[in-house]
Length: 284
Image (cartoon, rainbow, N blue to C red; front, side):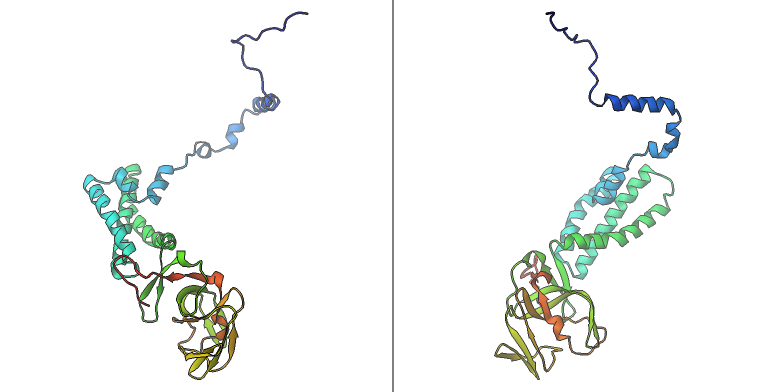
């Protein structure tokens, strides 16, 4: 029996499993020489502008690539300080000014890069970039900051800083919490949607009854809170708490808060106030 033939190391590789597909494909290409004309040249040669997107999204990147040396050095020094002040002074005028400085430096970096990469329309571009940064950066920054801190208006007109990472435990009676409330119309009053501050009156299984000047949790009486009704009752089931808001967003100034909107599911809890935020001690 003859020995099997040895494959030469200089022989081309054998066709793989896709050989039939490629034979048909190249036969089709040979029969349609104008196939490339079906695809526009701009589409065929398109390259995604990764660097321009990075300049628009990454702070200081535009300054690093194209800004003058002096502005680059000043930006790298001032930007992190302004970011820290904007976070520490969240909800205050100082924090707003620091955030405006962040927006300004980012817009300068984007404008400098585009002037370097595309010199045309050099005068109109900075104004357009500044307007776009002022329009889009605040909501984006607010969404990112919401993972760490959520500012909520108080009844005194100030701002209370909420820790969203403290939303897991079940609310306890007497504590102040921030919670989401959907919009709705009840009792002639439209309640606007948003994040509310409220005091927990009772937890699951408790019943709250309302009387003139007081409210009772089971049998224990307490002084009535603002905009409470003078009659009625409310019971919290499992996974619910009875929370009375401290800030009201009504369709009109006066009126009694709809008592059924005080029944809050535990899943609506946003967080609890920070006991301390940098150098500040927030107060309700």
